[in-house]
Length: 451
Image 1 (cartoon, rainbow, N blue to C red):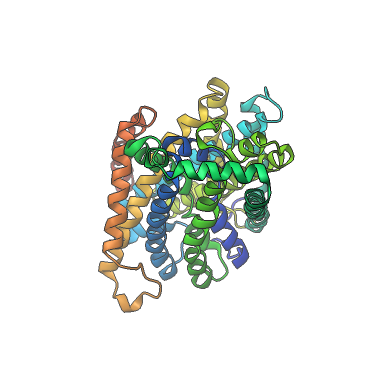
Image 2 (image 1 turned 60 degrees about the vertical axis):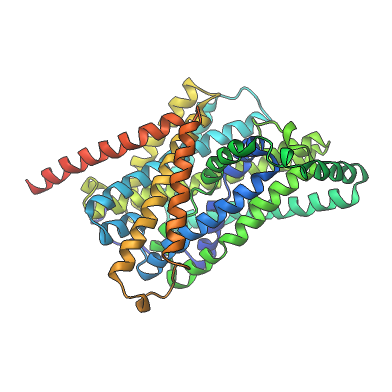
């Protein structure tokens, strides 16, 4: 039974917020996409992750500046609505909801690929359907239960990655055969022709997968609307972005390319699983495959939460049907959550029709949505600064406005790079069509509201 529209309750503790921030960074992009990104450019992928890490840190500082000033579950959609206009909030909110919904589909599909490592032949569509129903029910119970699931899911994958790094360091230093192979690998990587295995073109192409890997970092801002103390927990979570990028991306990729030649990786399974399997440590490969499944489920859990809250916020703004602006007895936006879950059923159909290519189709669509949302965040922050005295802002974007403009330029560059890529070109072409369709829908929506 639904209540009247109401504010969401502040049930997420600081430990939940920190794990949501950590979990948002580590998902399919690392456990599945990393192999493809390494193959695209070789060891120079480390530079791609560093560049991408700088950009996402700027974006998160810009978003954090507005979030600390005014915490909201609508996040940048609410801020665009407030500081630019209702149209900007409409475009931002629906694009963000679309992004998170598609990423949910990506993460569910990734789980099916990881399960194929153990039990090949399982119907991908059936697995997607079962997991969707399970996690929807979990999130309908309470936001605290969502926070607990995310806390433990994120904790498992973070702990596993740290142990994997320590174990890899042990192998590189103390295992005679691995040590000798590592020295040989590093020696060959010193050549620029090997370090940039596919030249400048391959390096630029790798940036696209890197950008997708960081998608979801902004979840922490959405969770601020239900956090107990967002003014304390949000800056703390954002400050750790650079450290997380270095530990969970740069060091893990470095471990992979030290343990095994990058050009022999299998792009169809997790590189962590592939490396341990190839060097003959099958138990470690099994453990990392289990962790990859946990990581994908964690990312799916966060995306489903973020999508439902964004839709709820759109309804509060008057940019979505009013029925979605309702919470149930435990203050969960149940109708927004169920509508989002219903839309995610598309992944079940896609996995039924295209089980082998589903993840690539979905990944390309999600990447363009991520770029659009991040660009809107940076643009909104410029408008925010124009309307507020700098002295009234407690948490500031460093080197503003130069850092802001630098990040916007990189996002535009990545979008242009996608036009050169056969697998990505169509999604770039579809992006302006999506915005145009939203604009028409917005005009009709405004006309109905006036009448």
